[in-house]
Length: 270
Length: 270
Image 1 (tube, rainbow over the protein chains, first blue to last red):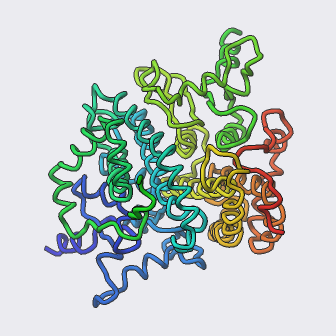
Image 2 (image 1 turned 120 degrees about the vertical axis):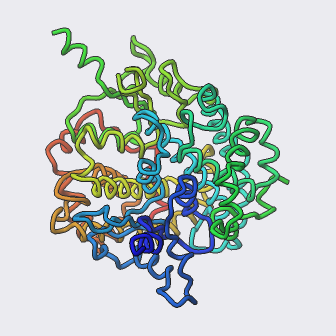
Image 3 (image 1 turned 90 degrees about the horizontal axis):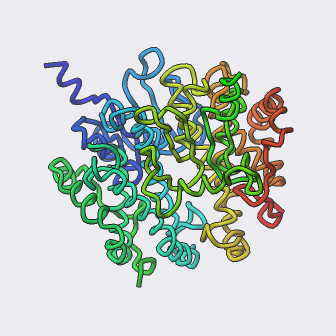
């Protein structure tokens, strides 16, 4: 059927992000995977050696330092990830939006991952924002001075930053999420941060915890007993969901490498 | 009239934030001021030497490191600012939410500062998020290693961070917002980032530019010719709005001091 083929080859949602790394695109991917909704991962789906257009070229175009917007009337994006949604823009054109928390907010409604009422919608949003702050602070442990320079050129500062992160910032965040799980324990059973079912707050936090376990394995092992709901209930129960296991074993899940989450043993607890 | 008095002494919206500094609370204050909607600024309105309760004590309680939530069923907050909205929570109780972008998002609808349709709602949100990223990067220029330590204890790193900020990050952000203004020039006339009227994206960006002019006066003067819409149209036109002039001259507007925006001459362009 032509309609089915069209839907399969041109999904409604297209993720525009760097190829080969989980990065900030991963928070968006997890929402689609959890909801079982198909999406195009433009750069990963269209490598430069393929016969079609270079997917990463399309990603770079939307945040080009010269762009004043696209042909559909969308303003320029500051940086990937961005999301293109067919038919959702002005006059039925494509809508292109950016900023990770904005993408999660946008998708939360249609993918039914934003809680069950208005208060929960804002609880979910604030928790995702807080998990993304932790994500950003993790990034800064290896790039405390200049995002565009090499880690090796700011290693002394990174050692200081990572020490402060492990000793002060990380435990503050972990304690916070543990207390949110405790607050919601009657409804969420330690599995969900808000209400009785999965939201994008859970997915976002899960991804950050997973990345931290890769980047700071010693520190995270040491901290696990301080936050039992988080480490013994929340993290493993989401990891063992059928859709998650399938996704983690797929080629769509990219390995951690030189993105936000990097394993530099010298930055971890010794 | 009792009802009027009740409304005056107990506004629907209460901002919970540190006293005496603009900080991240300022983005919320500007929304209320622009909309002409009354709000309580709990810590500033109730100083510790006053006869009533210590307002800052109430602020600290909601993000206490032991809190698992409040008596109205709200989860704990990670950090101020937070917003309490009477009657907006579950079962007509108070809703308490946190995370600056979440507060702006929440208020955008009722204060009519979130654009005129669904696409604009997400454009506004992504621009406010990007301006808040610039706010955070500004903060990190004087605290690149440890947020809880003194500037003087991380001054060498701050000099490096501020140099990268001035040379690479700041111009990237300024160029971006200039291009957004250009994209929207037919509708916004260089005065508004999205559509034909004021949104919280404008207010958020304005506050960050204003703070940067205080913190990095030389650098901002040097950069102003590169972004003429931003510096010659957007910034002054909003500063000259009647409500803004009134607000900036009021005691509700706090001076910059030891918050996000600090003027350390050694970090500025020499």
